[in-house]
Image (cartoon, rainbow, N blue to C red; front, top):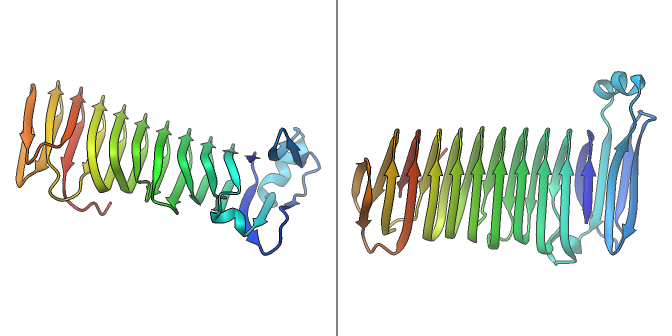
Length: 273
């Protein structure tokens, strides 16, 4: 499945039949929707040509796309992969279940959705993304945010990677395996619902806050040039300076932290933000 939205307000829904239905409403004569199947991939793509008429009608009468799949597509793994691109506008509704991967590219605008896939990738250049997992179990989760705000819920994965250049990422009920985080600026918040086996964290500036399950033990190797590293595990709350290594509890999880500036926090508190 390949969905591409330029500037429309798009919505995904489900029907009781066995057909995929696409409705496209616009007053802009230079816009159109193209639907076809190429090499086994269903393509639903909004296209547009430039005109002064487009500039005047865009704000007054937004384009709408309604994509309706058979109900079986929601959770039964009918599709192998899904690629969704939103240049502007918005996308809402549950994504179809995919047997392998769901990938989302948001350049601007807004996405409010849920996914069910073994592997999940999201790349946000700007705008706002609010996405939940319907399966709460993934092999790989990759999140990359250049700017804007991204909120995730339920993405428990064997391996998770979070990269933040600016803006904000909040991922609650996450974790469950290996975590890789890289924060250039902005705020990264991870609330882990399941056991963490390892953390590799880098902070150039900004803030990274990871909340682990209760009774988490870790061996922490750290290096901080400026800013701070705070660890709240095994009933201890400590601020680490310089470089070195320290163990907490059973030390099951291997944690490597490098902070150039800004702050890194690892604790077992319940995150409400």
